[in-house]
Length: 370
Image 1 (spheres, helix red, strand yellow):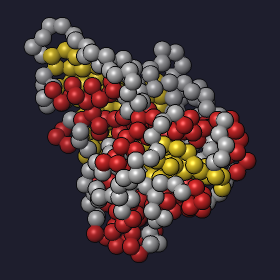
Image 2 (image 1 turned 90 degrees about the vertical axis):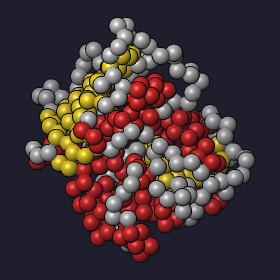
Image 3 (image 1 turned 30 degrees about the vertical axis):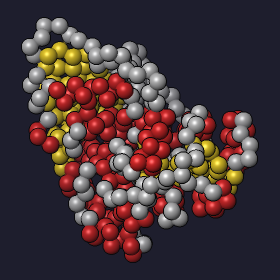
Image 4 (image 1 turned 120 degrees about the horizontal axis):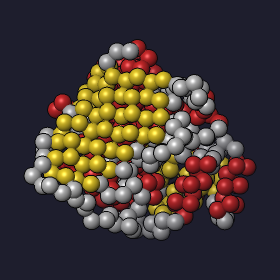
C-alpha cells in the first residue's frame, strides 16, 4: 500500500460517474442521497443512456460525455466512481488516476489478477487512491461476526453456504464460471475480512446441473487454506429454487473458544465453549450506511483522512486472486497455490504494461503486501 493524495476541501466531493446502466442508476441514487458528495458528470459510450438515467433520477445540469478526462475537466470533478463493465475497469481507472483523480471502482478490480496488479502499480505511481467497492463488507452484522471471530481464539473452519435462483437474462447467463467469477468474490472477500488473513491455496470443483438456465457452471464448492491452517469452505448455487439463503449466504465459524453462526441478515449468534446458552449481540446500528452507500461513505472519509480503506487496490488483489485460483483449480482438478497465481499474474502484468513508470513500479514490487 502506498500513500495517496487527500482532499482537504470541506465542500461536498464533486464526482464523475462512469457507467449509466442498471448498476449505474443504482449508484446515481446512492450518490444523490449522500450530502457529502455531488454528482457533476456522467460518462457513458451511449450518451442517450446517460441522459435517460439522469432524467429518471430527476437531475439536470450534469455534464455528459464519452471521455472520463474531458467530463472531469469540464465539471471540475474531485473524483471518479467507475461503474462500467469489468472489461472497462482497467482503462477507465488508469485514465482517471493519471489525470489526478482518485477512483472508487465497482468490483471486480479487473477481469484478471494481472490487470489488477497493473492497477495497483498505477495507483502507486499516480499517488491517487484506487478503492474497490466490495459492498458486502458494509454490513454492521458482518463487522460483528468479524469481532466475534477475533474472540474465539484459533479458528478451525469457516463455512459459507449460498443458494439463490436469479434469472438475470443478458450477459451473466452466458458467462463461463458464472458463480465463481460474478458472485463468489463477495463471499471470498468477506472471508478475508472476517479472518483478517489471506489465503494460501484452494481446491475447487464446479458443475452445472441439467436444469440450470446458465451456460456456465452455476454450482461450485471451494476449500481454501488460510494463513495459520484455517479452512474456509464455500458452497454455492445460482440455480437453487426454494429455501434460498440471503444474498450474503449463511455462515458458521468454529474456533477453540466456541462457535458462531450468521444467517446473512440478522445479528450473528454465538455459543462460547464455557457457556451453555447461545447469545446474540445487540442489534447493529440501523443508521449505518450499507452496501454501496457504505463503500461511498468510506471513500469520502478516507480521502479526507488519509486512512487506508478496506478495499484499497493492493489488498483487494488477493480477493480477485482467490477467484482466479478457484477457477484454475476447477479447470485442472488440482489444488492451486495463491502464490503461483500471483507470480504468474505478475509476469503477465510486466509483459503487457505499456507505461514505463508503471512497469518500473511492478518490477520493484514483485510481492504484494496486504
